[in-house]
Length: 82
Image 1 (cartoon, rainbow, N blue to C red):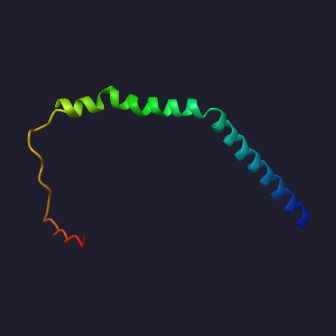
Image 2 (tube, rainbow, N blue to C red; image 1 turned 90 degrees about the horizontal axis):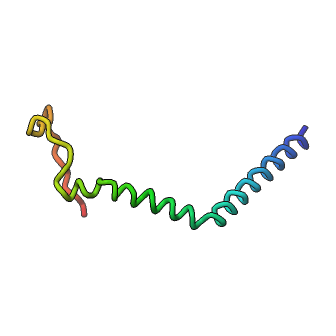
Image 3 (tube, rainbow, N blue to C red; image 1 turned 135 degrees about the vertical axis):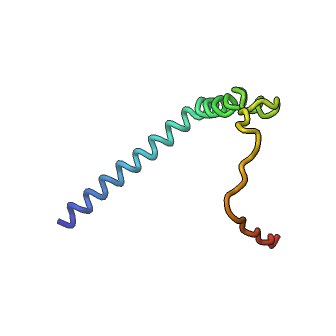
């Protein structure tokens, strides 16, 4: 019985090891395309208007014109030790 458990653990360990080596090899071979894809996604969000809206003053229109005040008493803010 103990030998069967050890064999199952050994086979599972081998499968996990092969999976890690396979994923590592895939990333190594395709690292340039992965980096380019991440760059495009990161810079595509900035070029899509998120930065332009913040700089140009355009944004969500305000509803009501004023900020609502918090309900109830506020708690004091402790002094920063830094």
